[in-house]
Image (cartoon, rainbow, N blue to C red; front, top):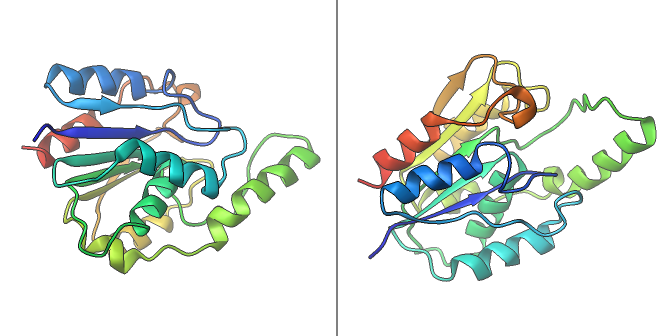
Length: 198
């Protein structure tokens, strides 16, 4: 079976920016099939739109299926996995700047824009994910964080480590791993996906 990688961008993102396009090209050089879709309504991401979109894109996952999620893209992947039958197995996942909680909104926005952002994030934060179920689907979870991410508090890494057994990788001075942080390539993600898919 051919190996497949699904790259899910974050809130306000696009697969044509950040490091996603670079990663797609690098994986394709290794003869891996890569899907990096533009997610629906990215400026106002909704669970009820993103999860079915991923389900339609992936079809039936198997142990040659891998995921890469950035920020809210990680959340969407996990919520998709939660909908699958308990006996589902997949190859693994690398999550970049993933979060369960965004208690500190540090957007440099007008007050009404900040309030709108809080409302968009609210269901993603408040609706719990069945982590025990997902943990049984693979042993290959990697979660990557930056020590100066303005949106993701480092306490989030403890949940990844304790609840799904993710290997934690801390990067220095990478912000939210966005183009605005100067990130156009992310070799650690490529490295970890290739390790998982050997």
